[in-house]
Amino acid sequence: MNAQSATRKTFRREGEDKRREDLIAATLECVAERGLAGATVREIAQRADVTAGLIRYYFPTKDDLIGAAYRAVMNRMTVQASDALQNAADDPRSRLQAFVTANLGEPIMDPHNLSLWAGFIALVHADPAMAAAHRDGYLGFRDELEILIREALRAAGKPAEPNHTRRHAIAINAIIDGLWLEGCLAGDIFDDGELAETGVAAIEAVLGISLQAEGGAQ
Amino acid sequence: MNAQSATRKTFRREGEDKRREDLIAATLECVAERGLAGATVREIAQRADVTAGLIRYYFPTKDDLIGAAYRAVMNRMTVQASDALQNAADDPRSRLQAFVTANLGEPIMDPHNLSLWAGFIALVHADPAMAAAHRDGYLGFRDELEILIREALRAAGKPAEPNHTRRHAIAINAIIDGLWLEGCLAGDIFDDGELAETGVAAIEAVLGISLQAEGGAQ
DNA sequence: GCTCTAATTATGCAAGCGTATAAATACTCC
DNA sequence: GGAGTATTTATACGCTTGCATAATTAGAGC
Image (tube, rainbow over the protein chains, first blue to last red):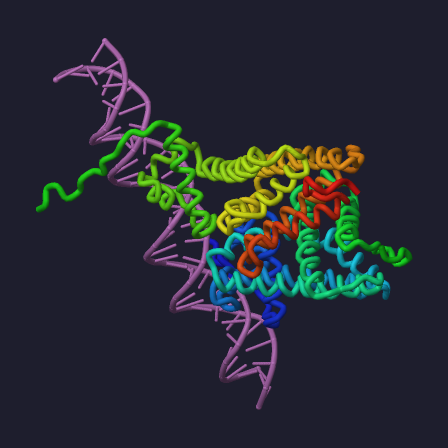
């Protein structure tokens, strides 16, 4: 009978970094399409065009891969938001507006990102390490936001005491998170850009300033 | 050898409603403690002091049980928030404030609720039935909020056009959701009542009115 | 081109999963 | 108090999962 039926899979030896990235990317695809439960080692491997065993070669356990994927997503979102700042005007108010708008638009506001994020958040309660990772990310985000807020207030000629900026950062962080959530969950029931507009308007109200560079304080 | 070693489990026949509730409660315990992945039929059954097969007697499939549990959580939170309204003063502004404060305090703002909610949200993207269930819940909450907003604006002598109240409902819903999230995830880094205060202040700023009954419009 | 090694494949296993189904039993009704 | 039935237990099956490990091979270095 066919002597060469079971031919062994040919393969290339990739660099360690490249493989890791590919595996993480494949993981994200799986999670995006069928949720965390759909991200099995076999499915991930198939999508990365690799056999399942290789995953263990790069990640001690599946949870490590999942954790790496989580960090990758969070990092990606952070980088994308920072990119928006790079391209923003110099005026602090414009920068804050750009930051908000970036976080409430593509590609950050995406159902796939939410699925990943939610899947991990659900684990935070059970896994202290994951909880710490999350808290760091949250505080980092809020600190970045607080700086933007302080500078925007100053540019508008308003006082920016730590007491107030902390509270403002908490509230504005909530606005961004909440709108991001709404958009990810049911983006189709909102007009294009509606959430970003709503967010900017709400933030302007909270801070009592306009985020249009032209407009002044009060 | 011991003739009576394997004694069959004794049991009581419970009413249908009671059993369903018990099974849902057991499911919520499992999800809260170890995430959705920890909610296996066997674990749930054990916690409800019942054998696994019984679950299928009340729920055609495990997914049905999970869906029922999700609806139960959402319903519970909604009811708790509505209860707060029942006990609130008559003034529409007080009512809105009470609603916000209730959503940003115990027992609604609780890590367990977040774990449950997040675990389910992660499924929304993959499961259309769950997505529909969620959208209904979300829109119901927002509609209730929009009514409170409209009446608060009117009581303060401000115009309340549908265009504006819709936007306000979106923004304020985001504030509540976002702060709820922050509180659930890291309640210990906030002072008692800080999040509720922050939320009320932000909402007052967005609406341009005071929510203290004494204070007037503008 | 040969050798050596690290990267990759292939195979298997034990555990846990959801579900199906038959046997047992607690309760209801007469 | 005996019969009948709806509820519950018990058992088993087929799959899938994550993980381990042995066998292979691509590519680097000499």
